[in-house]
Every structure is written in structure tokens, then in C-alpha cells.
Amino acid sequence: MSDIMTLFTANMPASIFNQLFDESQTADNACPFLTLVRYPEQKEVDEWGTEAPIQDFKTGFLGKTDDELRQYFRRFFSERPPSEQGMIVENWMAVLDDQSAVDSTTVLHYGMKKSMWDDLHEYEPDKEVFGEGKLCEDGYIWWKWRVPFKHSYSFFIAVEHCDFEILELLCRPEHRYSQGIVDYETCWKIICGDIRDPLGKVGGQREASPEA
Image (tube, rainbow, N blue to C red; front, side, top):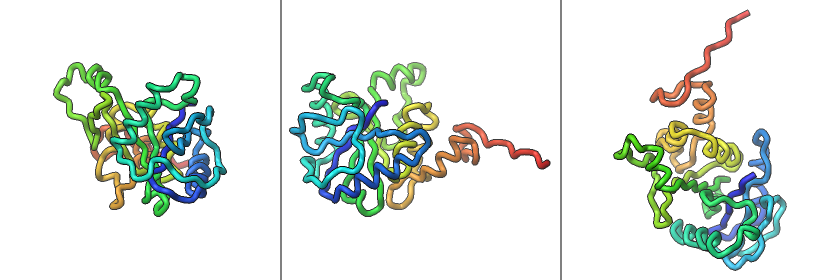
């Protein structure tokens, strides 16, 4: 199982991570998928993801911006041998910030190499990156979403195994609440065919079962 590097940009009680872990594990077939890095100098990481409960700690990433977190993220992989990287993947980050403690959300960052984007859009060279995707200095296009704790594992799996239509669905502004939180429940119903995609790009609505 691949794991997501998880960073705190605000100091908060360990109970916030414990809540994130517990709620994320209510998803079908869920397993530990977040690997907590408490400070940049941390030598060892949990090989199979960090499990709750954890103890209170002071983060070494206090107030860091997305760009600063990505710079650390790339150094982590470039400076460590694979044996010291746990199962952390090179295209996901999870961030817990000040808002996380207020509304039980985490910010999930997903990256795709620009070269892969170009290969997949070979016949659409002018295809624009959708949503808030941003080409960054590491050569990846990065998207990010604020996701409720309880949907974080399911969201991760959906993006890992989805096509571009579903990735774009998750980026649509009409599926964001006023606080910027993804309305994942509606997105999931569209993905499963329980409701119709208003734009007609994802799946199709299931036909109702005939009455007995």
C-alpha cells in the first residue's frame, strides 16, 4: 500500500490526527495510508503508515507555504535512500493546518508529471490544465483539495484509480462548499451512477430497479 507524507503547518493536539486516522478508517477496505513527518530532521518514518494514537508534538513545518512544503518533499526523496522512505509516494502530500482543527478537514495534494500530462494529451496539445492545477518548479502539475477526514481515504483511492473525467469532476467549483471543502458525497454518487452528472462527462445514472 502506498502512503502519503503528512505534515502539520500548525501546532494542534495529537487528538486531531487521531480523529483523522479513526474517521478515515471507516471507509471500505481502509488501511493506514498517512505517514506523519513531524519535523524536517526526522530520521525515521513509519514503514507502513502512522497509526493512532500518537502523542502531542511541536511541528517543524509551522506556517510553511505550499512551495516550501514541496521543496522539503523533493529533498526528502533526493537525499534519502529508498530504504529510509517508508512507503511514501512521490506524488501525494497531506497537510493539516489551522482550519483542520476547526472543520475536521485535511488538504490533499496530488501531483502528475507534466511529461505524463503531455503524453496523455498528445492529440490535444493545447489542452489546458483543469481546476486549480498548477505547474510547479519540480516539473509536476499539482492539484489540491480540502477533504473531510471521513472521506480522505476514499478520495485518495478514487484519484489513484480514476480517469481524467473523474479527476476533473473533483475539481469543479460547484462541488465545493463555501469554505472550500469538497462535496465528496455528491461526487461519489455521480461516480457510482447514483445520480446523473449534470455535464454528462462521468458515467451514467443507474436505471431504477423494476417494481416487483
